[in-house]
Image (cartoon, rainbow, N blue to C red):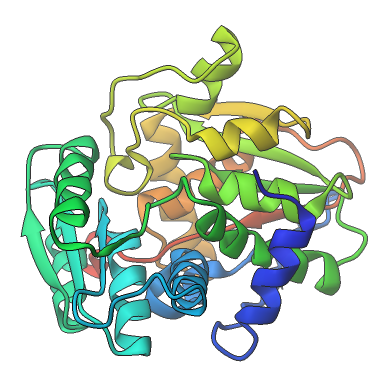
Amino acid sequence: MIDDSDVRQAARRLTGLVRRTPMVDVASGATPLWLKCEFMQYTGSFKARGALNRVLSAREDGELDPGVGIVVASGGNAGLANAYAAAHVGVPATVFVPESAPIVKVDRIRRYGADVRRVGTEYAHAYDAAVRHAEDVGAVFCHAYDQPAIAAGAGTLALEVLEDRPSVDVVVVAVGGGGLLAGVLAGLEGRARVVAVEPQTIPTLNAALAQGYPVDVAVSGVAADSLGARRVGDICWDVVSRFPVTSVLVSDDDVVAARAALWDDYRIAAEYGGATAFAALHSGSYVPAAGERVAVVVCGANTDPATLT
């Protein structure tokens, strides 16, 4: 569904419109280790890449009606990103979020001018409402993770990793619905291995790999607002079938401890989902081989700073 050419096309489209986020060297001992600081991206997460790519490509294709704009369902970050993208091109945005969405994210979505509608208790309920809205009014539907332009846009960060650190052996990413994983796998195109990290409480990819196809999982835990998809997306599953990936699970305690370490050691204010990839190394759930060069994507920072102290 997507490949390296889609990611490179997205990179050209997004030139000058997204931040080239830094890679910070945090090597310890024999393991070269960098943090890809995607929490510094516009809107506070990697999602801005995919949202801008989707909205800009829809406008190029004549799909975008400026009178009705776009609609998205989100636990928070995709809503922020798509509200930002809609404001960038001057069209309305309607964002459906579950009632459990953190108020820090909801308030920021509204500040971008979006119409926020709270529906149900989890992402799937907001998703159903967003699909109905798109059908009713003709808005461009922007999926949180399972659309080619969304995943390809997310994958542009992988191109930056390769350009900044060509010697990287492994890229570690968090997985919810799998848009970031799909984009990174496609962008790397086998030039580095990928470790996909999920909370034990939302193992969408891990369960799919065990069954041989995507399956629904229960959604709970500290990172559910950003990684709370019920199942891994079709685009992710297609890309995973072409490129190998190592699946790692971490506990909620691991995620909490990794988030605290990012703050205490580096003053990085990551949200729980943003700390999930780092949790694999911090907890020892993933142990790099001797000399393995590792890049960890810290993918989001939309959190309440009062909870970091």
